[in-house]
Length: 139
Image (tube, rainbow, N blue to C red; front, side, top):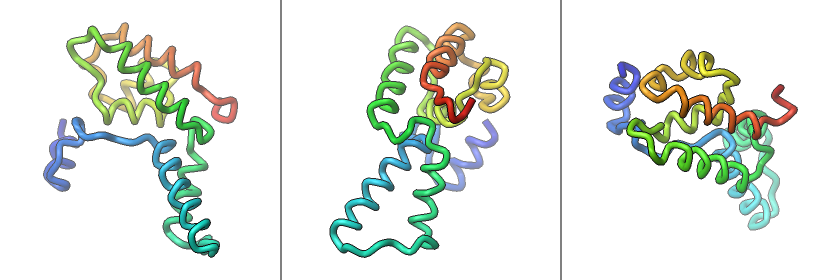
């Protein structure tokens, strides 16, 4: 709650209710822009350019191998799993779960303390679902 308050004060937004992107989604957006610019100008970006560095960083930590369908399906599944829950997982928490891919509830709670307010059954189901998306590169 303190982080949320500090972030809200600093950026004048409530990040819990804003759309938050996963590293994989940021990679997909940057790659699309990178490809568009490369086709349009036929100039290869300088590898030291901040845009290129950011794209490369996101590609390095992309948990879903550049698959928009996979990321979309994961979000859809999480939203379906929590449909009947009174305390839903917010956008920020969804993005963090997808970025961090915790293997156990205790791990998820350590990374994302706000999840303590959510039902243990919901967290178990989401973490179980995340394991199906886990790439062998991150095991």
